Length: 350
Image: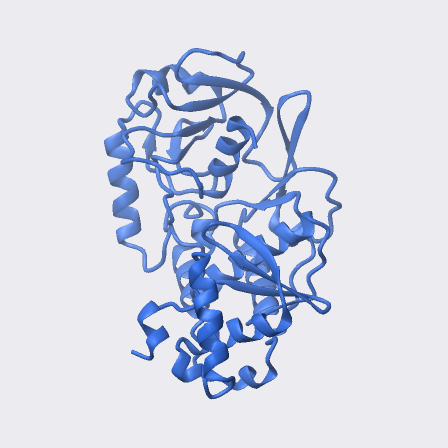
């Protein structure tokens, strides 16, 4: 992925795999109106490492980097392009299942109806294992993941800012305003921190102008597994891009080892960073959300790994499988740097 597309993607979804030092300026800024560029450049919101997307502007090799574009990254039903070879469709979540995916598409939760549609799809996947087909398409990206249950994970003014038509600034087009063009970075960062401190769920900013915060916070509190659901969606996209059609995900309406279906309080229910096990016919794949690694394994190893993930310790998993087999698989995964237990000390039964 080019540096420009990585910036654009991290700005859209609110997550980045690129390590960042303590932020003193915005990494990526999107302006809806070029008239606010002078005020932005006169502030300390951008620095030499910033990339600024400006409608109608010519590309600039100076610092900060200016990228001209046509269309919009904010309005569902529009198209964004920054050169003749790249087009990004912007769609509202609620209609996406009825639309054909013809190329890279950014799906936005643009109002409460979209948010409700997102929750319905998440509930269906969690309870029945049926994931929305459009959402697992490799060409699709879901915007503003921090507000949808993925956790803040590096989001904030240091990662991304959006300057609306009236000069209002937030972290996304659907975000609650943090200030206006010309405000200093510290002021925007403080407003972002205060807004999140007043919210019961991460992130209280990036959908704050389009979804009532009480509605969003209640829905996320009722579904502490949304982060894991979004990790599963990412894993499904990854495998689908490789031509692998996933027919089941452990913990989402099924288990590889049927006896585990009735295990109370499964330890892999909510943790978005724990390994995911995905079934494609008789083949089983493991996906590690943190490093983004995906690999195939034998059914026997997958069932053993599942028992450890669900039970949280060798002692508890020994109710279902042989202890020697459990110890061997736990060591095998540890040797490759992959975590099967939320609490590593549980491996010894402690």
